[in-house]
Image (cartoon, rainbow, N blue to C red; front, side, top):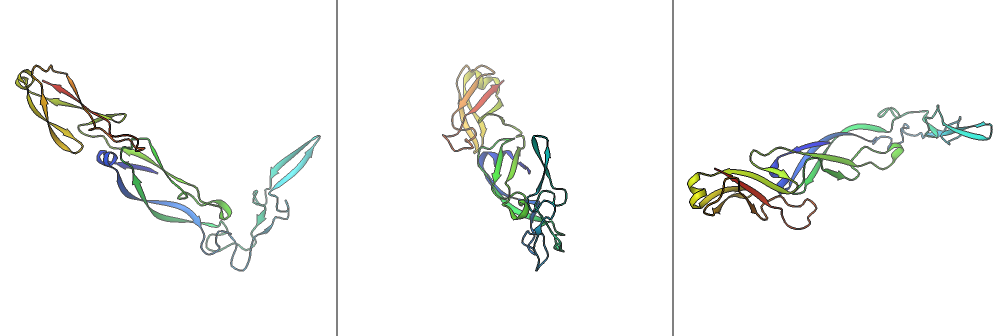
Length: 210
């Protein structure tokens, strides 16, 4: 499932809901595919093995049974709800918790929320692939953030304070006297958090331009 989130949601984490179609065990036949009062019987052609074996010289070749398609059983009276498939299509609403610091292309695994297994087997997993929207101001490289601030020439020459946007809002930042256009300042701990929860937050790199 492809999930698009905002830049702010990737920075701070979020909880959202998705709705997906998936195959689930039929509630009428409990996934067996057989009508009520009946049950699957062993395939008469492969005798329940699901394979047919042929002798070719010194070798024994096994092939999937065409009559039962490898299941080893046949359904003489199929369930009218699922038509013998044992599975039905349903819409399922799921909650997805997005960890702070996640980036585009990373995946979240929701255990046992995928398609139902055949013949009543366990369900698979659902993988949610994250796509983060671009930010109008910040650019992300790893966990570090980069931005560029226009500053007038007198402030660069004589020093002063400027307003720098961060993920938490604007902050005052002192520009030293004689700062050159193109100088980059490093604001520690103002970048993205590590998605695995290891260590603190990365840095915000601010480049000033006249």
